[in-house]
Length: 196
Image (tube, rainbow, N blue to C red; front, side, top):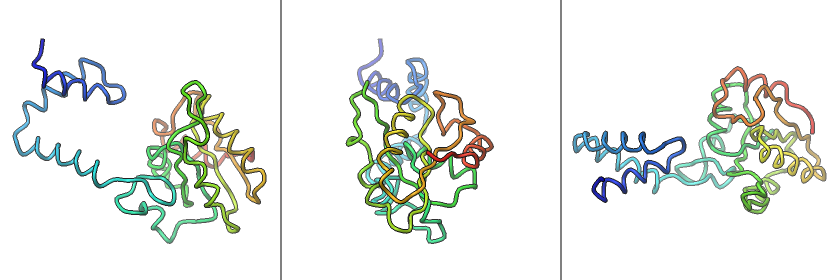
């Protein structure tokens, strides 16, 4: 029905989460209406993201260099590490303005159904980060089956370390995601965290 190049663009937009066929078509038609400068800017932003963003060498968060802005920040409490699933969760936690520690981004969760094992996510580097001065690990994975499985795995793994392991409280519904929660819910979840 459409030219192949247009269909390819629609299919590219469909790869975005929550974007179905109609929305992808609207996005594709919108890009056709952009002037050359706007379109070039969009293309350049995508290229810059691909070439300029990488994972922080320390925590796994998004970074433009070797370290993310949070790991570079010398005012952060380094004795508390909050473990999250993705960089989106770091942003959600930062919006609360209640957490002053550092993060560790797993970039995934354990999911036997999807064949994702502990060695497939960013756990090993967490273990190397835990030093004598680390007092607490806050596990802030999403309250889903996979998030809970990952939290339980981490709590068992960290039992042999001299560190307090806590889990954020659940003002979040089971199956919910941190990046969809409002700031107040996340503040209450951080304040109500429980020892694991």
